[in-house]
Length: 102
Image: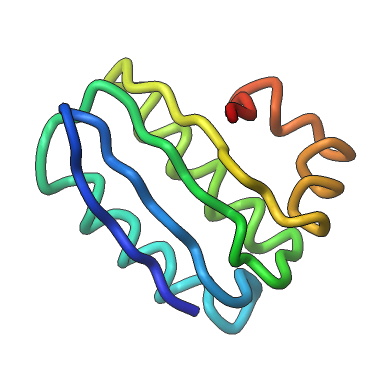
């Protein structure tokens, strides 16, 4: 599990690599929170093209970051979801709160 981050024009771009599950949830949560707390961002775009696996714990990690950013008025968007991530986002209606963008 790895989280890559870069900032461009007040947008935080995050890329989650590997597996987001019970084993990596604490690491992912801490790493994502570190990135989210560094600065104020206009929006956040999470690239899931290299996410190999995500379970319900991983969904909880992302929803928690969504709620944190919602309090600040910062939207989160999902880009390039892997086939597995896309299926989970559709089944759990996560695209309703974190829209998919191209």
